[in-house]
Length: 205
Length: 205
Length: 205
Image (tube, rainbow over the protein chains, first blue to last red):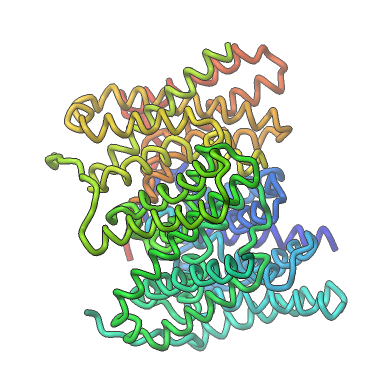
């Protein structure tokens, strides 16, 4: 099971790193800048979570697998940018899988550190969306995850399922799968069928 | 007294959350993005302070009142944006009150954690202005609190009063009130009478 | 030796603060905003490192020398902006010296806190480039250190030398000097002779 989780975690790291590298290439960063953005997009959510719960140094800095996976994803994107662009649709689905996994693992880790239900839900959401926020802030644009349809909401829903399951003492693995499916499902419906939340109406002054 | 402080703290959270939600609506974020910005504006200063002094997990994540108050403020702003816009002047005054309170409570908490006078003053200022910085960076603009008239200065002055009072062993409550009044007063004079600091003269190359 | 290191550290703080103040003046911040940017540019790298390794509160907040040096640099830049602009070339060299020093001291501190080779290299790099990233994000632009020629790379190379020397149990002072020279040398060759890394080719959609 632990190996299964590690594989999923590194898969999430891989797809988030691709999204970071893509943004880096589009903003004409050099090779190293692209790798920095890959690593930031893949690990900022988990690093922020670890700093906030006091689990320093963060696992993404201590365990070199994260850096290696992010760098491979960054190098592939750098050298095969045209192919990645053509894959945009599959990448979106992988990204939704990464979001689901990070939201679930983030909430689980927060619960293990003794945080309450509200904090654990928030930290699960943050683990999922933190990488995308860091990626976009590094290239000075409003984070897409705050604008996109059901992105942060999906992460929070997945984290909330984990927290509720923990509270009800349900089996951990089943709850993790359910949370990940809820998160992925919401995000998928948003991508495929345009599900979204309202935007406030206002006239510009 | 503790209830009094909690009420003030949550009032500060409320008005800062309104400022975050207002920025979110103007940048056409969806409902959830607006709530994220409300929470970020209201709590980032305190969260940064808690992380920097090692008080993890931060109180704004552990105590659900902060999230609840920020969400209520965000929902109100989302649904009554036109009314909030019309209230801009009262909101600025509430914002100045929030700034004063956060600067004072931030410096007090830093002193309680054993930090020295310079650090405690800096952390009081950061507690006051951190939310506004996070809010503006999330929508990719230069933080208003770095440009606006006597904003960060007012926060630092309020925090410095608390630190000086602590050093002179004056009664804590009186010092807190004095610090808050100094901060609020400076900010008020800046809003009402245009007090400000010089801007460097330079020719663009 | 300790005095020597402190002098170098504060010299690095001074030149990084100048770079922050320069950006502040160009973005028409008021005097206080310029000082905040000076301090952020000079200390964010070290503060991020200290938070990530759990060494809270960060030394740059505890030791008032950092604040004092950053403020002096900010005030000088504010009042003598034209002179600083004319000095741009020497400032770039001082900045490269600061980068070298921070990368070496950051990696050394991470090793002292028991981090492994990959983490220590990353944290050395982050200590060197963190200030420049914070400075540019505060004025809402893509960090120059992610775009500029051999900036982050130079910091990582310097940190890697320190880590390798530690692993080989070589004398610490010699390793520190070697790491700093590698970092400075790479950055110097980039400034003087245009050394750089490739940028990915892509057609805009």
